[in-house]
Image 1 (tube, helix red, strand yellow):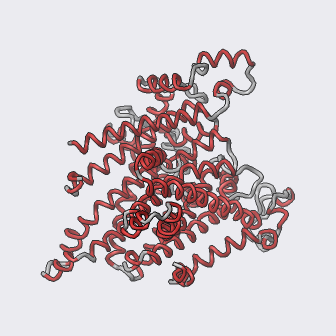
Image 2 (cartoon, each protein chain N blue to C red; image 1 turned 90 degrees about the vertical axis):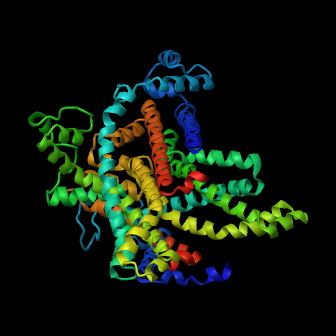
Image 3 (cartoon, each protein chain N blue to C red; image 1 turned 120 degrees about the vertical axis):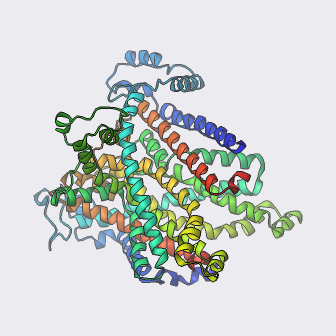
Amino acid sequence: MKTKLAGLSFLFKDTLTTIATVMMSIFIGAAIFAPWLAPFPKEGAGETNVDNIYIGPGWHHLLGTDELGRDLLSRIIYGARPALLIALAVVGFAAIIGTLLGLIAGYRGGWIDNIIMRVSELFLSFPPLLLSLVAVTFLGPGLVNALIALIISWWPWYARLIRVEASIVRSKPYVEISAAMGVPDRIIIVRHILRNVTTPLIVQIAADLGTVILAAGSLAFIGLGAQPPSADWGLMVAQGRNLIFDQWWISTFSGLAIFLAVLSFNIIGDALRDHFDPRIARQ
Amino acid sequence: MRILWNRLSSALLVLCAASFITFTLARVIPSDPALAYIGPKATAADSAKLRITLGLDQPIPVQYFKYVWQTLHGNWGYSLSTKQPVLQEIINRLPATLELIFFAMSFAVIFGVAMGVYAAKYRGRLQDSVIRIVAIAGVSMPAFWLGLLLQMLFAGRLTWFPATGQFDIDLKYDNPISKVTGFPIFDSIITGNFAATVNGLHHMVLPALTLSAYSFGLLSRMARANLLEVMSQDYIKVARAYGLSERLVFFKLALRNALPPIITVTGLSTAYLITGTFFVEQVYNWPGIGSFAVNSLLSIDYPAIMGITLLAAVGYLVINFIVDLIHAKLDPRVWMR
């Protein structure tokens, strides 16, 4: 496991993956160093400049300015922060909740397994994202509520994934022997089961990061995610929506940021899956 | 038969549960649904009266059973924003959405599978790489953004297609569509209203393309991966060794056996389209369920939200059920399980 992760060469295995890795690094860098990277940091953080509204892309403002005269490039750089934050938080919490419940279900079996699985099936009986949309409506729009709403519809996937893996490992002879020898459940779960579910968990997390950015962007676009004046990509696409025929750059570049972020996460997710599952990679 | 019965009973269970979740979200979580109904300016006496009319003073379980009972009897409540019966709104708007999904899905299946097959055939070559990039771009594309880009380019700059709407506004005066089934394009075809058909299809192109991007990408990825997996099986090698023509091996043996997972993904991505229509219809001002859903969500129109959620859960269930049936048809082993 350790040796596999130590070699990060799979991030550069072909041209496409290398480009994706570079793009992802740029987004992460933008999120962390936004105040230093943004050409107009104050405008990126929200300060308006009404003398400069709707300037097209050019030398002074590379991607133009928005309806409040703010430099769009700076806004997009600042927008990397909520995007990456929400991706990490949603996937992180969903993975923690799902893993805990999945481990319990897969290891214990019986009625508790039944209950956990029925409940997760229930959550999965709605089309993707619908439950999040409804939940965020009743919780009230906003970044944090969008985050909670997305966790609500994401955890069952992890519970199911981990449960399957856990119950496979559970029935392996060496685990049964450990249990028969009186090794406490806690230690079996941590030492044998958790260690064996790490790989599918990592692959799933990597595959989900991009999807969460897309989902959060969609919520913000229809007005249920981050609220003005925050610098949020989905929100910025929405704000430029009615100007698309004239001030086309606002929606175009904000949406491009979402697209490129999702794309690079998805390509890296693919590379990670191929790396851990050579059966698919051979093809 | 037994398996069919099992599936149906579990479907029923899911529906009960889905209605329960919907109910919980709409009635239990908001602090005062009556306030949402009549607005923040209402007097305390008015909202107390309304609580009794709406049955909100009764215990939650009683409210829930009442809700189920009324839903089963076609009383889905009144939309708070349009003041129309929710069921009527849904019936009026469903055909537009189903036609959109139909065209988007047809496009995605035909071109997605064809692209996947093509990529598998030219594995490792330039064609394969190009299709791989297009496919992964398709699944990474925010539908609302793609919609805006297509509008800007093909409606704004090139004026090849209309930017919004389902038909031209003057169509209903010049060539009104007589209502037969309620599906506008279908009705225009069977009544021989050629002008309306052309106009409808013209309006359909951009929204359908936008909606299909995700499914297109997903399907071509899956088709390629499954085909390659089947092609590496021993019986394909044997068939080749026997000297069967490459065309026969590829289409008759490989493609047929790669089909079941492709159908699963088709079903899955149709389910994605249900929520996909929310964003696409919003961008294109499409008079369907999706735009109704977004407006209801934004105005916290909870009877409408409950109705739409339930409808979507039923739709999802039906899609999964159909996928299972097709699976069983293609792979008789499914019946044995």
